[in-house]
Image (cartoon, rainbow over all chains, first blue to last red; front, top):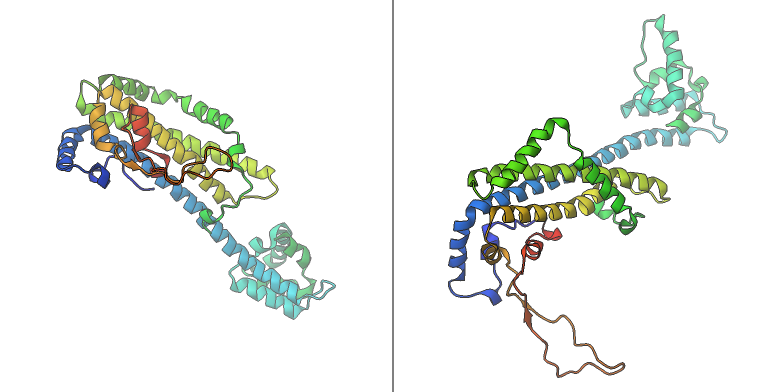
Length: 163
Length: 191
């Protein structure tokens, strides 16, 4: 985005091949006499350039949104990576390791419902029903794991696959 | 990641259905809401009065700018939607923000240049602006020297170009009419 076709600088900017003595003062004088309509034409130009800039700004916002999305996904991926690393080839995982995964998820400020998708939401509802009598609520991933007795926690594999 | 860096896209611009999308833009712009009828009437009135009253020129231009911006937004929407639909059918996907960038850079910007030119032409004609004055002030390329870019071509097959041929130096002629002058003043690259 550059250039302003009605700007006075465009009038005086001539190549050396066009140069004649007295040309520039003559053009400046002409510019002054025609300025009444030049200002309106310049206004039209400026308005459209502003709109193009605004639309480019919208694209910047789209890019920024995507970068945020990548950042958020990376946090989830960190948790999945740790889970994949700690689980045994048959898919089982020790209580201790599962707590490590949950601690990392909490440390990365992931909320249980966001991390676990639909299966996790069903699980949370189940835990909340159990906790209702104790007047406690689920706040962290660690709560979820602790409340479900570590490796008895249902479907970690399918939960992580759904993320 | 800048969309400018994502130039490798499977979308081929020349193969897109531009006539159909152009028609859709026109359809959206031609549909006038009932509540804006007085603005259309005002636009017609202003156009008719341009030669008589200099005090209305700003309002006329403001009205015209609004019309152009409205069309540019329709263009953005139609191309975004169209590109997203086309992208779904391709095996190699292009990121959404890159499609948005394409819509602005390759559809909206050229259309903006074209709309500015046609609006200015109408403005100059309806306002009786002297062509010679505009040409003298803004046709800055007129009179520039054109240097030949390559050696003269050989006329017979296998025969080298004549080494003693003097390169022909010409100058850019002044624009002959409004379309030519406006094309020089407002080209796609300067918007």
